[in-house]
Image 1 (cartoon, rainbow, N blue to C red):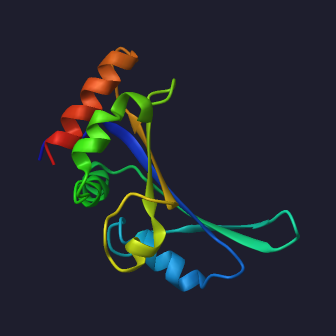
Image 2 (tube, rainbow, N blue to C red):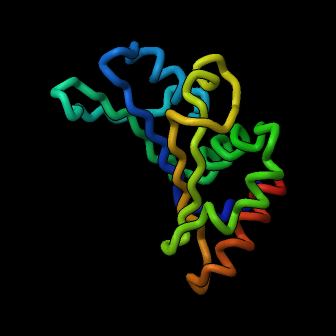
Length: 141
């Protein structure tokens, strides 16, 4: 298999007091390899309500490919590629938000609720090289 130009992929979802934690976990697992470990952190909202943050860092190349393959299922992946310059921050991290409700149903749709952050490999660590690497990786899936 070819290498992937990402050091890692972070996935994160917030589970608010009005949501079922198991359903939010199922939504996050839509993008993760089977039985992948998910970390839970409990926080508190502005009004004292409980918020559980579910997150996973995917670092193994095969597992990163799995996550990216799910992302490539987006109907509007071409739009994501067109927006790539705006989706890459100053630290060469690629950001994408995904619809939590759709993910719960096993669908890949852009929206709100799930955050994907992928650290793009670039040697040297220049923005142009990171953009090229990210574009090539997303187009090849």
